[in-house]
Amino acid sequence: PQPNPQVGAAVKAADRAHVFHSWSAQEMIDPLAVAGAEGSYFWDYDGNRYLDFTSGLVFTNIGYQHPKVVAAIQEQAATMTTFAPAFAVEARSEAARLIAERTPGDLDKIFFTNGGAEAVENATRMARLHTGRPKVLSAYRSYHGATSAAINLTGDPRRWPSDNGTAGVVHFWAPFLYRSPFYAENERQECERALQHLEDTIAFEGPQTIAAIILESVPGTAGIMIPPPGYLKGVREICDRHGIVFILDEVMAGFGRTGKWFAADHFDGGIVPDLLTFAKGVNSGYVPLGGVAISSAIAETFARRPYPGGLTYSGHPLACAAAVATINVMEEEGVVENAARVGTEIIAPALAELAERHPSVGEVRGLGMFWALELVKDKETREPLVPYNATGAANAPMAAFGAAAKKQGLWPFINMNRTHVVPPCNITDTEAKEGLAALDAALTVADEHTA
Ligand code: PLP
Image 1: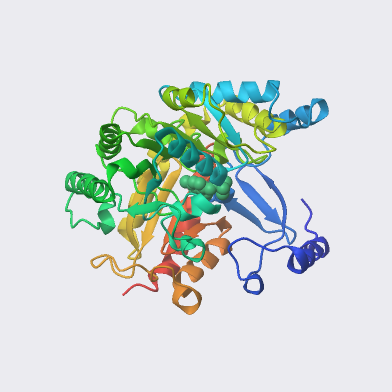
Image 2 (image 1 turned 135 degrees about the horizontal axis):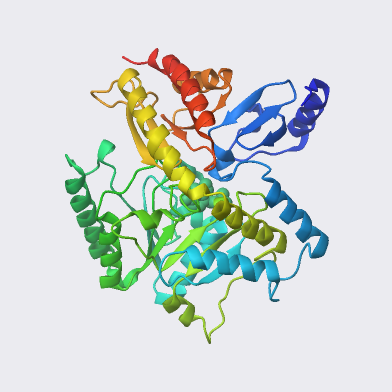
């Protein structure tokens, strides 16, 4: 496409005048004006093109502008753009069927929302009504969304300004060997001690007061920490013993991101939660959609008692048509298998090699198209390259790393002292190698800030 800086300047000016951006001090940001996107790339109005190692906010699992999904949205718009949620609508019925066929175990009923946070809101509401209990346990180092219940469940600093202290949420530590809160030396100890800590938390909170435990199957924004073998199975067993609903949040990890349809399928022979939340990859974010997959026992609770929750746009036909097309494309084009293969054959060995060569890379971890690099000042002490929740000058080393990546034509995902490698799940081998080479170059800038 031809560069067009004048249009870019107008887009930017109207944005700066009128768009109020998420999570930002409005005068401290400088959003890039995006002219277009296709596949794994997007470009600006000045002729710069970027390989997107972020998949947007980890949602374009099939990349941008997939022609079959665009066509399905156009066709749905031409036939039935919208319809109220109380009716049976073809796109909605078909999306629910395709999703239920892929979710684990007996999670066969789908409640649709517009995104991840609403899915978490409704999952916790269902758990509280199903059990008649008030509290929900969630992990530190987690993100569950920015609405009231979801932000209170979140275990990172984004909760602090919105924490209402009365949300009935109790946080606990989930396993993370590299920065273990349990003084563990190996995955087995980490798992045992994390499960004991959860048992102790439940004992002191009172099991009869706890409706649910919510966990990301693989925590995403918080750092892509793969749960050690036995952990999720252990949590499942604890939930069963105490009559606690087990909610797995697959908003980021679901729909192929980890190289399986759901991350829960990887662990301990496959984990079946009672509720599973999804969004993002369900339709690659082409039209807002999320939802809760519901077990037969919880569905039964609401079989003859109304479920007290709903949304005007629940199961919006355009969003559902996009989900149907996305899931079909993922099957036809082997997108989930591609995520697994490129992850194992290309990304894993390349990142391991970067970790050996770059003093700033403390650890790499992940699976499929879901990887984190922990950037450190010192590999021995594991001191993060920037302090927790750093801003301004304190965050300069990560800002310098990000700028270096962009200079190389790579758009990086950055959270605190980490960069995540989370490209589209249908990335080609050549694109993955191109991004890894750019990452290599950018890491030399991070290296300059090591001890
Ligand atoms: N849960 C997880 C695991 C997420 O990663 C996110 C978003 O990043 C959410 C929930 C919230 O989703 P949304 O931003 O669509 O409300």
